Amino acid sequence: MDASKTLLTNWDKSLSQAQHKTLDANLERRHFLHTACKAAAGTALIPSIALFTACDQKTKTQQNKQLKQEPWPTFAAVQLILFPNDGNGPSATDLNANAYLHFVLSANDTDHEERDFILKGIDWLNQLANTEHKTTFIKARPEQQEQLIHKIAISTSGERWLSYLLLYIFEALLSDPVYGSNPNGIGWQWLEHQPGFPTPDKTKTYPELLKR
Image (tube, rainbow, N blue to C red; front, side, top):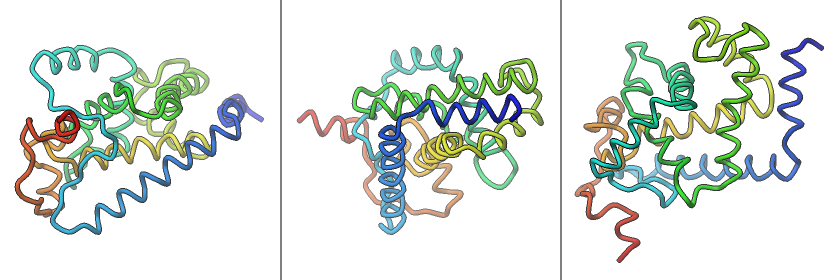
């Protein structure tokens, strides 16, 4: 077994059976929520975890600084491979998918195993990049980055990790812009989706309503 295959096998083995079941259950739950959302004609997706707030300028400034530091540039690079700027619709960058993922992983009520797993994936991806190309993922050439993504997808944990990232890109695509993604409804326009009215303003987002 070569070094890369050993690394991918160890990635799968690093999680307990219980952790595998929890992470798969979370994925199945989110798949269900997305399917239900598609079936609800005329409605915009409300984030399925009660964690998003309409950011004030101070919060946005702090987030922008954090997004320039690792692991967020690497997350952005992976997202762009999964949802590229290929002329067929908005890219992950256009959708602010990285900022949306940052909200998810920064929220207090995000499942801690899910958060740890998603963050740990960057470490494993960099280990694989070092094994294959003697560099980090973000410093690898574009063709090398795509090859690395294809390689991790053959492992159980790698496929699950990419599935989580894709699901959060889809949430960024479908969510109301008030939650920080899908700016100006760019995703809705691409899908020719008519959101429900009225859409929420900053005082009527889901977390704000919970405070009342």
